[in-house]
Image (cartoon, rainbow, N blue to C red; front, side, top):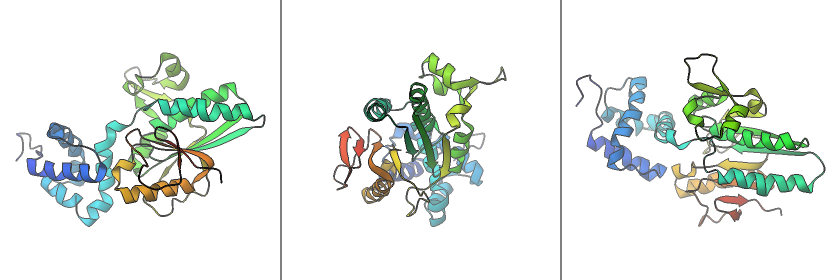
Length: 283
């Protein structure tokens, strides 16, 4: 069944098949009112794959090859509205006021922190961290940092490396910070903005699947953000990922999860210090 322009229609049976998978495996509710949204977002994937209808797309997605190759792209499509600058802002307030500033006040020696945004998507979280940390550095010459951003999708990492966003993406940022951290396009017809170069100086992006046994990272971090990604995995895989992140934290380091996530019931060695914020104890 297609419209007059031959654009495929997501049939109810195929929507139920997809929505059940998304809810069971990713933890994202897909009620009937989201059918049009899902159809619209997946339409691009059908075009890229040269698949004519959603039934064939479902068959491919749920095949061994599809789960290996297409699932990451489907996840990207489903979760594209889940990233933003200064999302869950109390995390950044806690990081600054309860972690970094007290550390700077305790030490007269240079302080260097390594941070990891482990599900960085198109880079908004990474550049938010860079904004917060650069503002701290402006007032503390003895402070330095690096930020690693990682994601399973090369497509979103390419966007993150460019650091170019539609101006609507920074609507929630105060005007003073917009001027401090973003450049308008020289093209008067463009509605894009770009993060300033100094925000990218201490930032690196890397493709990484959190389900891998070896992340290929040979250093530890003082702060790890792993927000709104654990909901994609069943509990036993959540525990595996959280332990791998634990092993990549310095003792005394902090893990930040999304506000809908918790480690309750997973029997992990983290210490809860605030809602969805956890500490690796110093043994």
